Length: 210
Ligand SMILES: N[C@@H](CCC(=O)N[C@@H](CS)C(=O)NCC(=O)O)C(=O)O
Image 1 (cartoon, rainbow, N blue to C red):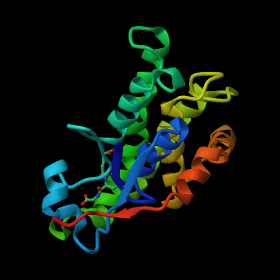
Image 2 (cartoon, protein in one colour; image 1 turned 180 degrees about the vertical axis):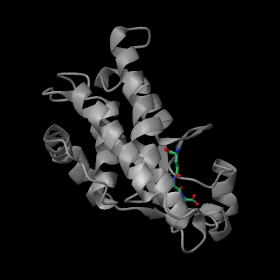
Image 3 (cartoon, rainbow, N blue to C red; image 1 turned 60 degrees about the horizontal axis):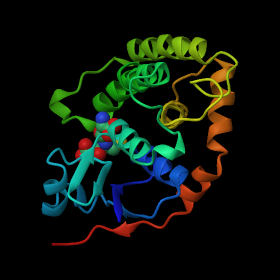
């Protein structure tokens, strides 16, 4: 049985949504950060970095939301959610998978780190105008890449759409302005998928205590 360790409203939604698109059996363990779950012995054994999401598939343990989406898409290749390796489709898919994490999410993560995630002594104030400008530039590139296509690779939904849509949702919550109507429409379309509703209704299990 696949096991996902995560928490709603975090990057674990990416892996969680992917599992629901695939409609494969899995267990979802919802970590309670306030109770110290991410620093527990069990969880640090799975991910010494203490971060979610983590996917366990038998003896295989993977962290990083993008790597989990790729693994799941490749494992369940009939789904078509990851294009086959060595093809033009995969190359463009990889391009957007890297872009979303290194360009689109990066300014928001920088802001979040300096607002609350880093220890106080490491935080720098006054970064907002810079990161908002950076985000806007990345959104501009994404908007051009999407154009009037339904999905980022054209006519087919892939894991890259999950990663991008989640990140656009993050932007809305974090109040980063999205000026491009095609991105707003794209996010709304993808968030209306039945897999998103199934994910939201999934009951999280408590992290086992050891
Ligand atoms: N690059 C990683 C980032 C993982 C990450 O930072 N996860 C956050 C939640 S969105 C987390 O676990 N934070 C808890 C902590 O840092 O203690 C990914 O995409 O999976």
